[in-house]
Structure formats: C-alpha cells, structure tokens
Length: 197
Image (cartoon, rainbow, N blue to C red; front, side, top):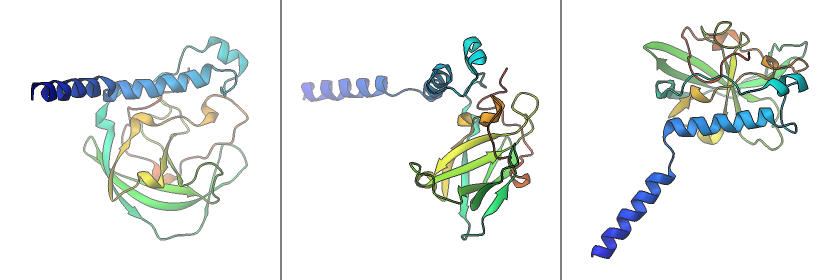
C-alpha cells in the first residue's frame, strides 16, 4: 500500500512539474514567435529590421483577457469582400457570432471562414478586430486571432493574449485584411502583441 501511495505521489509530482502555468505557456508561445521573426528562413522582417530585432513587445499575460464566449453559428451566407491594405479584396464568409464581456463591457465579434479552403489549413477561421488601443499601444490597423472549427462550441474560451499583428505592421509588400466595422470593439484589449517599434 505504501509503495502504491508513493508511486501516486511521484506521478502527481512529475505531472505537475511537466505542466506549465498559464503565464509560462503564453511566454513559451511568444518565445516561439520571436524565434520565427529572428530566423532568416521564416522572418517577415526586412534584413535591416532583423539585424536590430530584440523581440516583439507584448502586454503581460493576463487571464482576464481569456474570456468565455457564447457562440452562435450563422446559416451559410454570401461571400463578402474585405478591404485590405492594398487594392486587393479579401473574400470571406461569415461563420458565426461571438458574445462576451470584457471588464464589464458587452462585446460582439463575427468570426469568418475563408471563401476558399486554404490548403493545409482545414477548418481555419479568421477573427479580425479593432479596439481602443489601436493607434496608441497597438497597431492602428487592428489585430487578428486564428481559430479552428474544432475549437468552437456553444461556450468556449477565447484568448486575446494570443492575438497578433497583420504582416503589414512589420513590412511593406503585404496585403492585409482590414477588420470590418462590425468587429470594432468599444473596449481596450490590453493583451497580446503591441505595436512594432
């Protein structure tokens, strides 16, 4: 009996040490992003910016921005065109509505599916948004979150600590969708990545 108890204790200890805390998980995710930005083979930065790159700036991890959302799927509607940072029109289909609260503010966002399936990314969903930090602490053109259809449920958690900038925030030559008016939040999202430089 003592041996079994000791085994359970050791197993519990190993499991607890192997599981990262929430903040550590976020920091690990950010370290991986910074590594991609530094690497010549994966970076979207110019050679000059890469030479000076010391890491992206982020808000401190904050679980208050990992919010529970209520999801309502929309009937398959028409494809709509998104304005972009160039003359290109990006085509998406509204997929569903997310409702939640942040710091007491009622919020609503539309999630979109690409009009055409992206090879290698089955079930990909796109969540562009703007908030009151844009143009101040964060990129003026808004930020993005990625989701998968498998992530979606009637209730699930949406983590703004994982939001990121469009490529256009870092370099010219990209064509980035502009968050539509319906995805402009009347709240400050002090989470995720900040403005570049």
